[in-house]
Structures are given as C-alpha cells and as structure tokens.
Image (cartoon, rainbow, N blue to C red; front, top):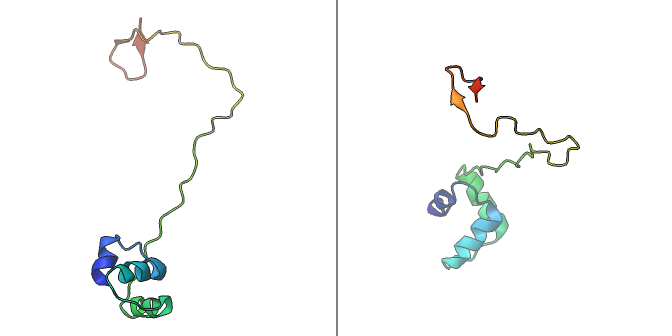
Length: 82
C-alpha cells in the first residue's frame, strides 16, 4: 500500500487505492482501505484548481504595430529606436 501511495505521488485516496489493490489481487472494502490509510498517516495531496487569468472576450481595439519589429537596442530596456 505504501508503494502504491508513493507511486501516485500521494494523490490516491481510498477509492483509487482500492482499485489498485484489486489489480494486485487484494480484495478489501473501500472503508477498510480508508481505515488502513488513516492508521498509516497517509494524507492525500489535493491538486489545486486552475485559476483562469486570461480574458479573451474584451472589446478593446488592437493597438497598431508602430515599430514594425525593426528594433535597435539603445541601452535601456524600455526604449527602442527605428
């Protein structure tokens, strides 16, 4: 059980752990697996939900490309010369 938990990067809970144990021929109930995990201090790491940070539905006009990508470095990061 410890090897399965480590192989899953500590992500498998009782249900998935039960399924993995059945693949290896160990047939136990989900509640038994949960008790065994609790007694072994297996704490599942939860994945965080991805926060959407891009808003592609805006109504602003697109800024024209005045420089046309013909940049010459002047010495300051925020300056360009054509």
